Image 1 (cartoon, protein in one colour):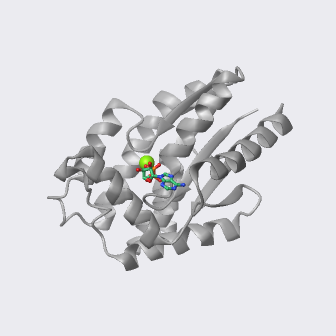
Image 2 (cartoon, rainbow, N blue to C red):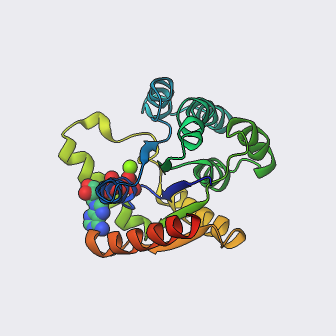
Length: 215
Ligand SMILES: Nc1ncnc2c1ncn2[C@@H]1O[C@H](COP(=O)(O)OP(=O)(O)O)[C@@H](O)[C@H]1O
Ligand SMILES: [Mg+2]
């Protein structure tokens, strides 16, 4: 049984924090899993990511952005995700196709039909079995993301997306909530405006229930 679990939400919503914690927890329980991320899940994807996130590329058009994320996804699905699924592993993935609809669709205004055409080929029609959507006000998410970047002490760590205005991020938040509305069974909506441990409890409950149901 396929077990692709994706983590979605705006910048700073806690995806990377929560995926790491739940992966450690599941590994302790001897669940066979991999943790991966988009677009950085492959070597080629990391190179594509360095083009995508480069702050100097502020003239990148939405179509280019979408093709690049989908190029990274094409590689990721074929090189990492599909082989792991074939080995019956649980795949925990930090962002996947929903992010393209939220960012390049709702955020940048690209037509969903255009995204679907390209993304269906890129993703090999692979759809997450469960998606955790971390939702919180964009002001709080961006504050957290900025604080994280300050801690990294690299001025270059604020990427092209984090630099976008509040309206862009609000459209993405709404975009995600709309995707959820149209596919409620796949999603679990998580109030990400709480402390890490409380959120992690919910994450563990949702994933445990899902894995047990599937077995
Ligand atoms: N529930 C939380 N409350 C406060 N700070 C958090 C919480 N979850 C994560 N953080 C911090 O916020 C920043 C962004 O979290 P991160 O997991 O990197 O978000 P994302 O991967 O969704 O962009 C990090 O510095 C992290 O330590
Ligand atoms: Mg992250």
